[in-house]
Length: 187
Picture (tube, helix red, strand yellow):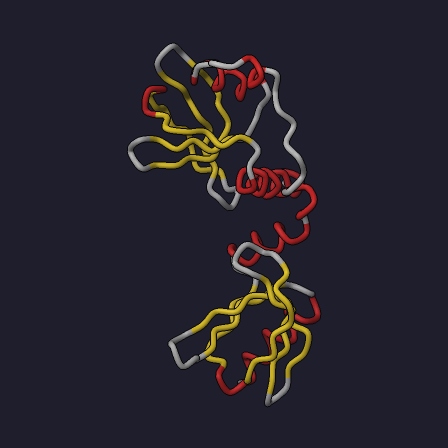
């Protein structure tokens, strides 16, 4: 277990989240959180839910441990979310356009373009995209697309009639925006 302890020690020293994979009677279980302490018998974890919210303290048997994930893309996203809970769950400023009533998808896409608003579009073709609207015509739009981890994922053109719904300033788009801004500040 020397490599396990090496990673656990690094996670504890850097105060970074880990994913612990343990054997359980019902099958493999995944526990997320910040390492408090560990020894040959137990591992103590300040637990997090899959959504990054605090979930108490767990004490797990070290002998059940079969894997440790550290510093992967999912855990970095979870850490970002935990460090920005107030920003992510802040009240949403509602653009005046939404108070007018009966606005069209074209008007909403144009507004998102004007405000450089990161949005999530869900299309009828079972496709969801995070990104910024770059251009809008009467029937189409061009979108600069990003992954849910804030990584650039190219340009995409779609017909406006295929937009099923738009998420504007929800929890997930705020996280993607925070991740994207963090990447831009590093570069």
